[in-house]
Structure formats: structure tokens, C-alpha cells
Image (cartoon, one colour):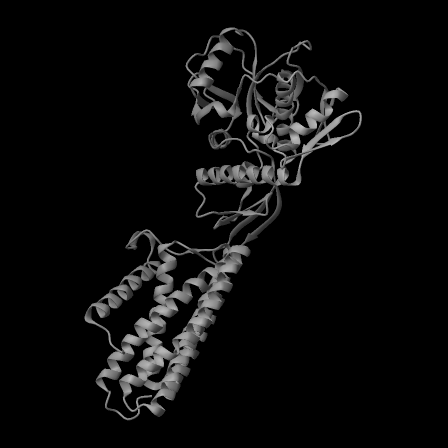
Length: 517
């Protein structure tokens, strides 16, 4: 029946007051807000920078294959199968094996129940393809294996990019995956992203290695340049420590030399290895290598057992701060390349806000005027529910601190139209019921009940479309589908609770009138 208990009336009233309170929070300055939450403006409304990064997975593939070669040797050695001429070429592992053992080796890789798979899960047949080339065997990543590797690399890169940007304190960044080898970074309010680009472009792969001019070094040597791109040194390929052993890194001012340095703290394993390496190599130069270039190569004067040290290299305080940030956030699994960059000025963003708000206000006013002319007092009830519907929608977006974009505003405008459509269906159905039913209360109740199926069908199909858009679409489309999806729920609440409550109160007091609508 068209009846609301006092408890339901109080509950609906409290819900409306609560969301009006939350939504109005967006109108106040940060210092005067009731709560910290608010709706964030997207890049198209606030202005800022847009960067699309692509991950170069070639070094990751090479590194994984390099690690795999030693595992292959170890495993087949335990089987008394000799692997020879093992090398990596064109991202494939090529090796020879005696003809009598060739079938055994191929079966080991193809059989998921083989001993090699539980022992080394990375060898599972779906990750690698093995081919018989006649004189040798060729092992390479399968398509599925490459997808898994790229996905893992992307997840790791995404987390490190987020850490680096968060450490700088950029306002409300939006960092998202694109495909399985790209990362989208949106930085609202940032007009000059030079520093961000510099930080994101560095892999930050830190190693500590000894300077060695002896070509007979058992680990091999390579020639590396210093950061000035002029000087160079031969450095051992043996890695004493890597950035994985760092616990913390901070910029500091060295009181003795009065220059800016980066002080670092090692974990327990790193401190032990560093102490041992410095104790037996006093007098040697220890090269500190970042992304393939030597930052500095100090001479070891004494044992360093504490696990604390410092990196010097003629830093400014800004460059020392950035280096410390890179080391704290960790090394990227692969290099990142900026393949697309856009900057949206705040003036253009403000123009978008103004255009969106004008469209919303004009559409809203036209709907209000039309409904009021068409349904008189019930048009006024619809308009009241419509305003409260907007407060509900904005309040929910505020609670979740959603990012509002221009397509999001379009979703709000569409929500207004859908809310009106539901009320029109109800009132037209009530008119049909009044032709056959003289009791106004029964006619109005039947109108709401019998129109429910059509309204639910329309809103559920729209909700399904919004869900598909949210999960399949990109950033702007997600903004549209989010506001549209939330708007469907607030619309149903405003129609069947707010508007119906106001209608029930009016009809109950005027149930004897002959023409109510």
C-alpha cells in the first residue's frame, strides 16, 4: 500500500540529510571542510600532465634466460646428462646434448609431471617451447610465458612508479595499466613534468663493484663511463652488493667535505657482505654503479662493518634527494620509455568545467520546468526528488573520493534524464489506473507497483551496459560509467522512497479530491 511507517520516514529523512551534508563538503575550502573527503577533478577538468609509459621487456627476458641457463646445467648435471655449448642468442637458449639423451631432455621440458617442473616451476611446459634443431636444442619463452613475464614486469613497474610519484608528493595522481606493457600516469595540477619524467626514466639499478684493470679477473671486466660521460674505468662484473640490500637512503650534508652526499643503510645480509668485502679489499676502489654508469669510485680506507655508508658524486641537494628517492623506491624491472605526453592547461580545464556545468544547469532547468507544467504538484514532488537524487549521487562520489571527469559530468546529466523518465512512467500509469479506480490511494499505489517492472528493466539493462563500459573502457569511459552506474541506484532510491514518500503524504491528505493528477 501507499503507506510509510514513522520509522521508514525518519530513516529516509536521515539518509537525505546525511548525503546533503557530505555533498556540500565540496563547496568549502580545505580548511573549512567538515570531513577530509571530497570529489577530485580529473585531468580534463583540473589541467595537468598525461604520460603514457612503455616497458622495454627485452632486458627482463635476457636476464630470465641468463638465470635459466645455470638452472638447466644444475638440473641435468644431477641426471648425469652433459649440456654443452650453452649460450643465449636472439632471446633463445641454444645448447647441445648427446643424441642418446636428447629425447630425455625434450621429454623433461614437455612433461608437466617431470621432476624438473616441481623442482623448477618456471620450466612448466606452458612457459617454454623447446625445439630440436638437429645439431642442438633451442629453448624459448612460449607466447603464454611471455605474457606472464610481461604482466609480472608491469605489476612490479606499476608499484615502483607509484612509490616514486608518491614520494614526490604529487597531488592525487592516477596510475593505471594499459595492455600488458604500458602504464598511464595522469598528474592533475602539474604543468611541468620534467622532474617526474627524469625520475621515471631511470631504472635505478644500483650495484657495488670493484674497479679492476686486470683483464684476468675471474668474473670478467667491462668498461663503464662515469656520469660526466668523459671519464671511464674497467669494472669487475662481480656484484658485491645490489640495491636490493638497501633499507634506506637519505640526502645529507657531509660536515668534513661540506658537499651533499647520499647516506644509505644496508639490511643485515648486505651489512655482513659489505663488511667482509671492505675488510679484505682495503686500498681498492669500490665503484658505485647506477644504471650502467659510475656515480663515484671511492677508495676503501677501512673496514665498514656497520652497514652504513655514503655515496658522493658532486650532487646538488635536489639531485641527491632524487637519487635517494630512486634508491628507496627500488629498481624498475625494465626501462620505461615515454611514448606519449600531453599537458592540459588549467584554463582549458576550467573551460571544460564551465561548459559542463552550463550544460547540466540548462538541462536540469528545462526538465524541472517541463515536469512542473506537465504534472503540477506532482511535478514539484518529482523536482524535489530530482534535487535530492543529485545530492545522493554527489555524496556517494565524495565518500569514495572519486575523480570527476568531463564524461563523468555527462553521466550525471544522463542520470537526471533517467530519473525523470521513471517518474513519467509512474505518473502515466497512475492516470490509467484512475480511469478504472475511484479510490485515489489504491490507484496511486497500483501505479507505482505496476510500473515497477518496466522501470527496473530499463535501469538494469543500463546498469549492465555501465558495468561493461567500466571494466572494458579506458579512463574517460570509466568516469562516465561510474557516475551512470551510481546514478541508477540513487535514481531508484529517489523514485521509490523519496518521491513515493512525498506523493503518499500529499495523496493521504487530499484523497477525497476528484482530480489529483
